[in-house]
Length: 172
Image 1 (cartoon, one colour):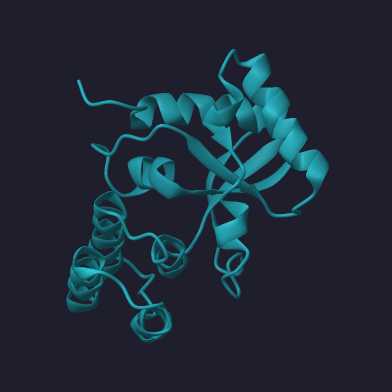
Image 2 (image 1 turned 135 degrees about the horizontal axis):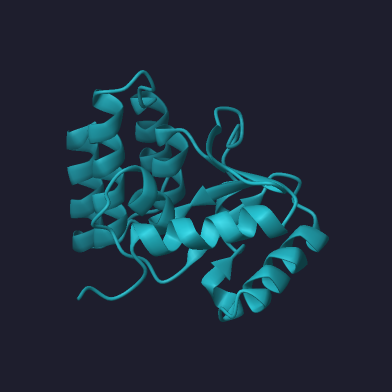
């Protein structure tokens, strides 16, 4: 069996969180891809970013992990460091799951890709390609110009990373 949480487990955790933690939260990373784009995707953590960005939100998320009997690193809010560097990251957010206390939102496909660019591991590239495939059949096109500009602004890379960047550019 593949390592990590599957979509069903991620959804179960998010439903529990949305009943315990208040506010609007954006799901990003592999957990988002598993729920939205690729049900075969597995992940080790659930990356949630508070739209308010308050320290007490982060602590409430850790308290929720503890109350659910999860290691606190399972609910990860460190992705906010990457997400908040993207202009307009929250503008096109769409509801993914609504609970009694919180809404779990998802970013636009463009923002999802932009969050993956700085690292662009093999799994990140797979996530970006899944977003591109989804966007091709939806009413939410990817801002390819914006993604190309972001890639061009990245520092030089070794051959493996350069190859993944080129594959992403070709897919756009």
